Length: 342
Image (tube, rainbow, N blue to C red; front, top):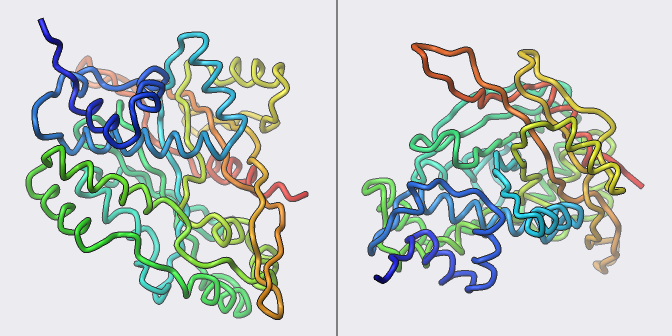
C-alpha cells in the first residue's frame, strides 16, 4: 500500500527541498494529528507549523550554539519541542510602510489561528510583551511572544533616532499575500499551491525591514535601550527560539559542561511553574552608515536560543494543562543576554 504523505510534510518539502525538510521533521516534534492530514488543502494550523519550522531553521543558521545543540539532538535521536519564538517591535506610527508595533506581526498570526494568551508589562525595559497561542494546538504549536518598545517613554534625542532608523521600513507583505491571508482567515485552510506561495512571504515578515542604521543613531539608541539598539540591526527577526525541556536546570549544567556560553542563572516565575535560561546571544557583524555615506562593519549582539521548563497548572475537573504563561521578571532577565556588549 502507498502511504499518504502528510500535507505539512509535502508543503515544507516543496518550499525547502527534501533534505532540509527531512532534517527539520527529524529534529522537531510535530503534532500527530497534523501529520495525519492529507489531501489538496492544508489547515491554518498546518501552515503555522510549517512557518514555525522555517523560522526555527533560520534561527539555527544565525546562532551557532543553537545549531550545535540541534545537531546533538539529531545525533542522539532527541526531538526538540519548539515552545515559542520571540519578536521585538516598535510601537511607533510612521515607520515607512510598516504597521506600528505588534500589528506588523499579529496581522499574519490571526489568520493562522493565533489569539492573545497573556499581557506582560516589561517596565524596566519600557516595553510591553504579549503572548499568542494557536487556538487548536495551544500546547503543541509554538507560541509567539511579541514585545513592543515604547519610544515615547525615552528622551527626545532617542525618539528622533528611532524615527530616523525606522523611516525606511518596507512592508514585506505583498498584495497577493494579503489576499491569501484574507482567504485563510475566512476558510481556515488553503490549497497547498497557495500555501506554498504564501509561506516564503510570511518568513520575510520576520526580518529587518529598514535600511542600515547610521552609527550615530545606533549609539544614541544603545545609550538608553539595548533592546532598541538590537532592533536597529536585527529588526523583526526571531530574537530567540525556545526548546521546552523536562529539566532546564540539568540541561543548563550539561550545556555548560560542553563549553557553551550559557546565562549564569535559571530564572523562575512567581508561580514557580515556569523556569527559563538561555545561551548568550550570538555575535554578528552588521553594517552602519557613517558621515559621508560610506559603510563600516561593527560586531553586535544577534539572536539567541532559550530553554524552558513548564509545569502543569492545578488540575480542574480532573484535567491538567501546561502552564503556558510567561513571567515579566523572567523575560526582562532573559532579554539581558542580547545586551552583552564587547
